[in-house]
Image 1 (tube, rainbow, N blue to C red):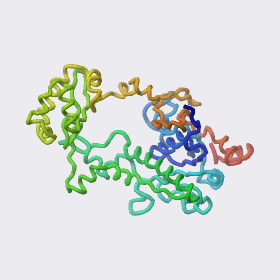
Image 2 (cartoon, helix red, strand yellow):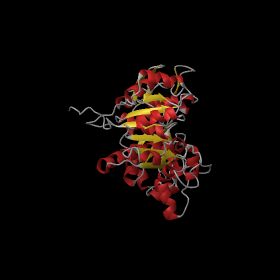
Image 3 (cartoon, rainbow, N blue to C red):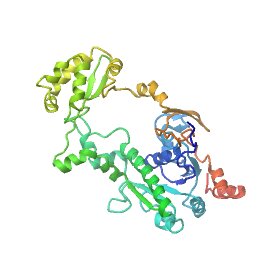
Image 4 (spheres, helix red, strand yellow):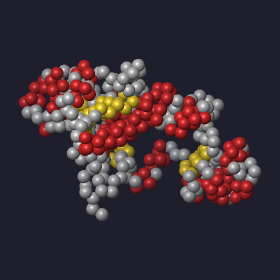
Length: 402
């Protein structure tokens, strides 16, 4: 079936001042959806993650894997907006922009006249997204905020880890990631609202609030029951079998959450009698006798590989615990179109994970590579901000642009 072809946010222009993860991941998703994202970067090094540790594309002086992860499809403008001439460039860009995204500490942009109250009167249709650690106001608003600290303060860490160990943070920047997703939803909602109201608005998203919202039923467990949820490692404090299990060559994870699934699991493992065994016949009894149930299940599971068990148990919520290599080499990943290779202008080919959005009529465009620092400065200043070639050269001479 033929599609309309245009991504859903085609025609939307975003001026993006954000750095590191939450903001850049948000604007990358909006870019995939078709928005034109103009990323404003410090001419002296750019986004902090360009200098990040770890693997680099193109060798030691190449591009950081960290930056590459969150900046697909954007136009990079190297601009010093701390200077009046730089602020003038920003205003020329905002004149045709739909959205501005920033994640500076509250109050920083006010020094340059780029805070929401200063801009709202001049650009009443502008949607202004602020991402911060603790919100735009209040006694904590001036604090810096990093993902693992927010995991600690929000209670997330208290429910993660082994039962008899300390609370552990999630290795993935889960608070940043969830804030990015909520930010993307908020921008789309604000664009939708503007269609009817004709007005832009300020969207205040805090990592702290997002972390609390992500507590989900764990938060409600405490609020309604009054008790701290117990840590259970790879298991579940109120469900069994719901954990990792040894096979002959590694572990699989099984999440058998109800009576029917347990019956199907017993049959698949060749022991239908477990379903009526008084030690295992109810969820409560399975939880109470978890070590014995685990021992019996692993006696069976150790007779074959995790790959073969994944096939035998494909009708059940069970799957192999994979390494990163095993996970990303899995044929289904390519079949889903989740692995992309990008041609970066400076360092060559870059393998990355692509967009997970699949629209039937307005497909996303996740084909454009992350930019080199300042790669689009001249193009954006001439074509969007309206500067002549001579004016661009003069700005570069004054070190306003890189």
